[in-house]
Length: 215
Image 1 (tube, rainbow, N blue to C red):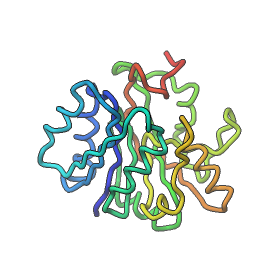
Image 2 (tube, one colour):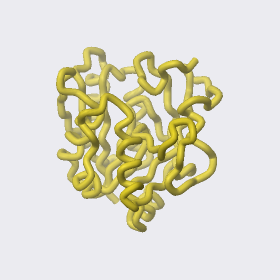
Image 3 (tube, rainbow, N blue to C red):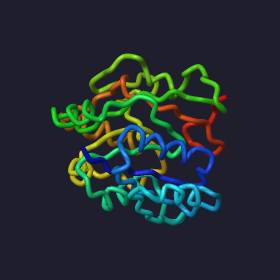
């Protein structure tokens, strides 16, 4: 089974190597990785280049042209496989059965997203705020009461390529493009599956939007 991975990067030198190694461990060294880099100035690209045996395609996006949705849509344009994983560069896969993910996508779910465990400099923290949505119970069309809308998170989410071609992410949003996308497709009578049996460690980053106000 072949996967394409969209990996957005801006100065992720601390954890991007862990992320890529986990992709190899769970998806194999034939995985296609689309690195969408937003003018990184640290060592993250050098670290990516150490994985020279992998199929890593580098695509650049400028800060002036950046939005989360635009970066993902650009990544989709460069994917050659039908199954796509979107993952944050500071997320590290710790549990995944790729066959189960493909079966869920083939059964009709337009997206499958997994559990994220927040780690503050290696320490597991109490899953409050946004993190409280990553429960131990798998759910179809998970509804977030705090946000009063359906929830999805592109830190660790799988899609079929043709779904994202037909329903691209909104490029005008500065954040939460995943939630807006989820509410659009669910209100259009499509289903999304939260699978608590696929898991990543989500490492703390100083500039990570997910971590604002946490800690």
